[in-house]
Image 1 (cartoon, rainbow, N blue to C red):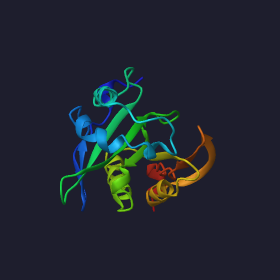
Image 2: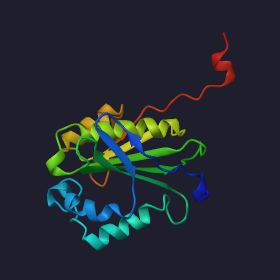
Image 3: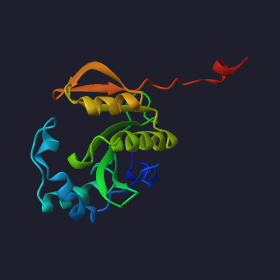
Length: 189
């Protein structure tokens, strides 16, 4: 089992229109009105969290890893640079699957507040996080998308993910093509 210190730590990422801020507990008060919209649960189920529940969740997530250290947790809040408004979040859950435990896999998820959808924020932020993760050595990306959530499917497609035949809790598993592992003999002339 990897030690918690082996997981990358979320760093601030800037894009053309967004600043991706590593999650802090203090984000909860600002984020609650954004994520309290029941429409955001149309495809995922559940209900919005209370302010206290959101703060508790952020407190757990901001640690950066699961309690047993088997997963790395990276979370970013999406802030529009033009006006400083918080518009959403992207998260990555890292695991080291066998048989290649040195090459982590990241499961990506994104949520953009209803009032901020349709502006490309999820796609821009998810692409930035995917690039950052690959720079950290992550070789494989996955996402789970409800079959009727066409906007999230478009984000997954923009990341280079393709749908599989696997359903997990009613969502389609999307997967990146694994990067080839080359040996010195593979690159010899």
